[in-house]
Image 1 (tube, rainbow over the protein chains, first blue to last red):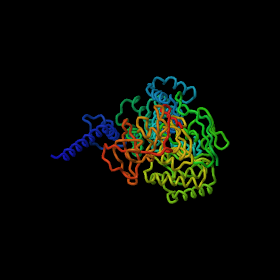
Image 2 (cartoon, rainbow over the protein chains, first blue to last red; image 1 turned 135 degrees about the vertical axis):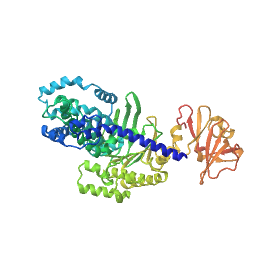
Image 3 (tube, chains in turn green, brown; image 1 turned 45 degrees about the horizontal axis):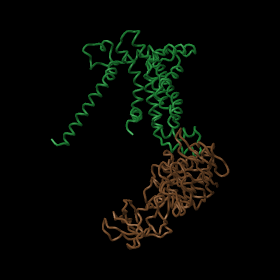
Image 4 (cartoon, each protein chain N blue to C red; image 1 turned 30 degrees about the horizontal axis):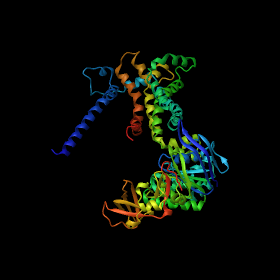
Length: 276
Length: 344
């Protein structure tokens, strides 16, 4: 066996290994999808059934008992709205820190990041009470604001890193050309960091779509997101695996399609800074 | 059109002072070059004139107006950056038009000015391209074009040629000189390359460690350097320095009583080979750099002092052989040994 053959074999083994790992990761989603087309009896049968006559009765039941599209709309509004609000605050903040740093900038970034380390349940009471006082319980507005705030630190840090890749001379040139700070951001920084901003926004949307803690605790019927819909199926009615699978599939499907369509941008967002 | 006056300008970053009490007068239409080794503060001084760096104390005036607190775009200056600093996402046309658009110039006027500047710089055919699709030299011309269209009183160049290859550098240098002749604007140009400084400047400002060492025309600096630093910085190869122990008896007589207090400087092009009895300076041949039109001969004096002689023809001598050199009295520079200052 020549060195080249050995290398080829190594690569093939690595590829097979990668497929196995990918398959392991994907299996629960696959099984979820499969179970959603089973009857409740088939779902709990032992040994598990891989081949069966698929049924849509679970989906029909969900559509009958709940208003799927209202929950889906709520998810869309809160994840996109929360991301938009966060971006609106994060872009100027990251701009300021990237291009006019002070000796405290690093510390401020670290402090922001540290807020992500706080367990969310620690501030549940005050936030619940604030929402109650302002009549924001079970409103999309409450979720949009909270979603924006919980993602703000991570968005600022990612954008800060993207912005720092822009050569400062380009901004100085725009200043010499008489651009106002607003024009500098909108006409120079944003177009140059567009890829980074888009992937950061996508990442944020995915994270918010899947956010469970606040949507379950602060909403019930009016502003409930798909995540809270899934939750409502799991607890009070006992474990109906097939129905739970169907509702979970419905909750995951939109964001998976969205993620698949935007995967190029997402990968760049997730691996930012890893390769220059 | 306007001159620039710098009065008692100092600059500190926190506790670290980087510019000390700079005073400089730049006349209207003058081409001034700031030159010095890296870290001497030449770029900082330029950026202070541009308004990109704040002044810690003192005043900078452009024309009759003190501009300390004036925004960069309102100073009537335009800057060409070392890295070009073009807007990568805009076409060449939009790069050049950006400043005019910010100033809300009428569209027709923008079009007219951009096309005129492109004509001058021979980039008319690239107006629709993005900077990515241009070569380094073309990008630099776009950067210059971006400055021209704003019709500034003062042009600022921050090492504009250092990212270009040698041939292009010579060509672009010439174009900048032509541009100055054509526009007649005040130009301030930063470089660490003394050849650029000598060829372009009406006036050279030599800086070291945040202080001005000397201001003068290229020839003044070449013929009458104020100190050993300027003497070595201007001219290539740099000036040779000799102490009394490097000199032969003959030269001791002809040079006015060199003692330990003084050193003399002689440029490599001002030393000529001579007979032993007329020798002023002796040196052992170390190596010869052949450059075609002339040769650079590296020698070591008896004291161990190294020096260079620029000769039209390389000497026919072997390595280690002792060679004799003389010079004319009026080509010898005298400096104080301790301070390095010129002494007559």
